[in-house]
Amino acid sequence: MTGNPQFKKQLTDEIDVTPEAIKQLLALTKDEEDVTGVRIFVSGGGCSGMNYGMTLVEQPTEFDAIWSRDGLNMYVDAVALNYLEGVEIDFQEKGVNRSFVFKNVFASTGGSGACGGCGSAGGH
Image (cartoon, rainbow, N blue to C red):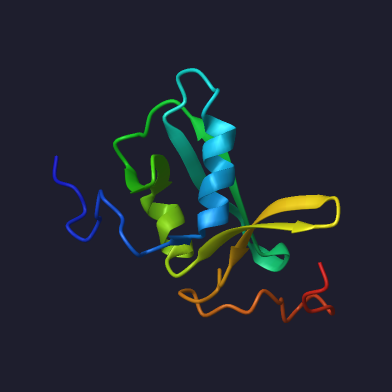
């Protein structure tokens, strides 16, 4: 079985995770038994756009590329990586709202986040 020759198992600068996001993710994973990292996933499409998220995982799969920094492992499969190249993952606090934010998610896909057939562009 031969793999995709362009698929890199070790990621370097394809995605960027801010120091604050790394700190928050490490805090989430440190007390979780058997968790070795965080999976970044992409779902959706169409007029509602793509949804980006993360979940804790025990082990990467054979289809995952791994991004590692400061003790944090992030796993991204080849399909999700197509939508994530050029993204910056940040952690923001605005008042009582705390969240991870995916920035520049359309940098590599050329999309705008708007759907021409919906009647309303953006505004989500």
